[in-house]
Amino acid sequence: MITSISNPLIKKVIKLQQKSAERKKTGLFVAEGRREVSLALKNGTKAAHLLICSDIYNTDADYPIDIQDHENILTRVSRAAYNRMAYRGDAEGVILVGQQQSWRPEQLVLPADPLVLVLEGIEKPGNIGAIMRTADAAGVDALVLAGARTDIYNPNVIRSSLGCIFSLQLASATTEESIAWVRDAANWPEGKKPTVVAASLQANNWYFNTDMKGPAVLLFGTEDEGLSSGWNAVADKPVKIPMLGDIDSLNVSVSVAILTYEAVRQRHGS
Image (cartoon, rainbow, N blue to C red; front, side, top):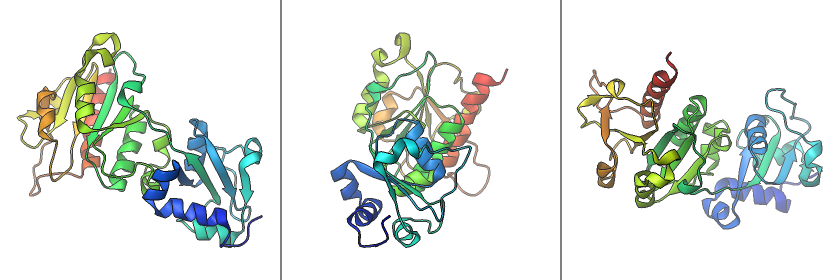
């Protein structure tokens, strides 16, 4: 058991938690908590270290972690050592150091009528995590980050997603690469190019009057800038959400949830 907070492994985990440059250099990330670790392992994350504090950790039938299956990478740590690493002190008692996975849009495996979300330039980890939770709950087939401005394996993204980062088909690319991917019929099942729906304050059409039952891509930009001009040639269905009060925009994660569940309603309403 590691008891010293000066142990090299403890220091390594802390550095990965705090430094984006360290995560980029090593290709590793840190996930903390039973749900997050369970979902990471369930969905094929290659684990480098599994750290358990027996004084805190309890099993969870909904989010199991097969500790015996990971004995070769298991390290037990004291409460003091765990709390030195953990964002949430004394909570759940399990930390995973795992290998990051990086996918390109063209590597996504899509069903016949996919529902795909594309986020351009979204920066706040809390918003990205909240959108991942919506995507998971709504059964979205893939999430593409175009021109991402934040480290997708930022611990705040993982925490706010409640581990859904590991349950989604997730890809990243530049804005230009993402536009090219959406436009190329060869990237879509049976060559059926999707309806591309863009959330926009300048649109004339209400989102609930737009057909999203077939293959569909829902586009979202930042709250202050919206989508970049390159998407204009791709987005054949600009839509808006009614804003009946004094403000002129919603949090982007809320906008994503509204449009995504309208697509779900249309696809499964019967």
